[in-house]
Image 1 (tube, rainbow, N blue to C red):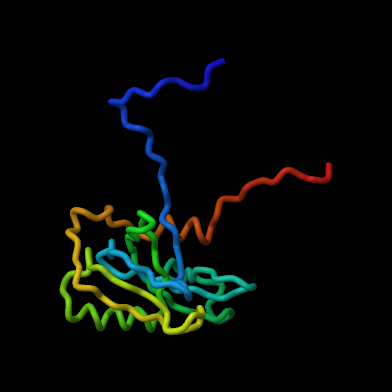
Image 2 (cartoon, one colour):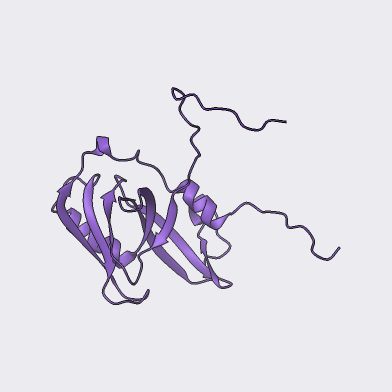
Length: 167
């Protein structure tokens, strides 16, 4: 049986669908990239049984509201040129407030070069945001996306069946 065949140089290789990663602002490094979304997305969450879970109150009812502590995050799509990929950055409410204040001076968010870091090398340290003077044309950026696929992958991963080790 043959499982392989030559590739024609005129054919495009198949493209694998990739879901953007969701990351917190790291403690030890500064993220440098280009904003790929034209808005900040809202992500209300709850801390329950040792992990973060999305609040489903906007869909009608949330079994964790009033039971588990809540925390709000903002999501921003960022193209990281060093890694050559788009990621969703999870920002605290305070960081989104800083972002909104900085954006009042600038009309265009999409394509703006940005640096994001922490004041100290700990994940509990406040996040700082700095805009650079660089700006990329939106035509040169990856297509703007929504965070829905990323959030589904993070909060509702597909259940994989594991073979029973004790048979």
